[in-house]
Image (cartoon, rainbow, N blue to C red; front, side, top):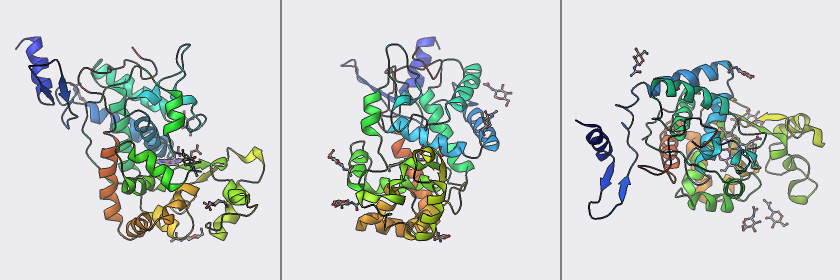
Length: 328
Ligand code: HEM
Ligand SMILES: *[C@@H]1O[C@H](CO)[C@@H](O)[C@H](O)[C@H]1NC(C)=O
Ligand SMILES: *[C@@H]1O[C@H](CO)[C@@H](O)[C@H](O)[C@H]1NC(C)=O
Ligand SMILES: *[C@@H]1O[C@H](CO)[C@@H](O)[C@H](O)[C@H]1NC(C)=O
Ligand SMILES: *[C@@H]1O[C@H](CO)[C@@H](O)[C@H](O)[C@H]1NC(C)=O
Ligand SMILES: *[C@@H]1O[C@H](CO)[C@@H](O)[C@H](O)[C@H]1NC(C)=O
């Protein structure tokens, strides 16, 4: 078999060739790197488990980084690009600056993967696998993700500022951001369940503690004992803005369904978490996931696969970056 035939037969598994036109349609595939990088998943899993062993929070940070990659112009590794003289990237967006974490872990994995299989595996696939492993290693479900995404050659600060949902937004607005990406109202409830681990800075929920919606009162939808704790962790002055509070104070590092129990208990941390009770359909899902951990696990995996399919580049589009921080 010559080189071209090899490429052709690798491609034909996942691509449709139209002989009458130059178009090639490719899809993600579960065995995409089986021949070209057979040790990929081992390399990723080993690095993610070391990173979590060193710092438990890293599981949460990697899951969020994957979300912020996918929700902005698709899962294309754009969130990983550093600013250059000609590019203002997504790391400077409101939701990412001094907040998005885990870049060094992705760099380390990429370096190991390049050693095993040079210029073969995209940065966005590495991030997708790292997030999948993080969910599992934190105690959540294991789900299979198809691979074959390619990396963008650019990023967009303005798209990141517009497309990543903010915790102050209404459920309606957040749902609109999800549906514009092919996700739905159920995915909002399911994927918000990732807030079962990790931390938020005080400024992301402080108005709930002291001056909710301009009322000079705390948010009435916040449990009084949690309110007292949070008011002492986040005193009403700017110097507390970057203090951290756990998104799920009951089981801080465990990827479980307690997030939903907290919401039923008026103990959702972010306004956007508690807002899931503001709509009958989402409230009934919160109720269901609080009762049926297995259902949450199963639905979470399915919604993550959906999220990981948003706007992917495949086939000949995009590139396989050599360094996740810079386009080739
Ligand atoms: C539904 C709309 C969402 C909003 C408004 C939102 C907002 C936030 C905010 C404000 C933080 C705290 C960031 C900081 O203080 O630095 C946070 C953390 C986090 N978010 Fe979300 N998020 C949403 C959806 C998601 C989704 C879909 C996922 C993943 C599937 C996710 C995973 C996480 C994780 C794991 C953390 C903790 C990160 C860490 O500790 O490093 N979030 N989110
Ligand atoms: C995969 O890793 C094993 C050791 O874990 C090594 O012996 C083997 O050569 C590696 N295979 C490839 C194709 O890199
Ligand atoms: C371990 O985690 C700490 C933060 O807790 C971080 O500063 C350090 O770089 C990490 N070390 C490694 C080897 O990842
Ligand atoms: C929801 O979106 C609309 C239109 O973009 C905007 O005017 C409004 O301020 C948003 N509301 C909230 C609570 O974020
Ligand atoms: C905030 O206040 C406005 C005006 O009083 C009201 O219409 C809106 O429903 C309030 N939002 C929340 C989340 O309570
Ligand atoms: C209900 O909320 C209180 C206060 O935040 C908390 O101590 C308790 O553990 C919560 N119960 C459950 C089941 O989440």
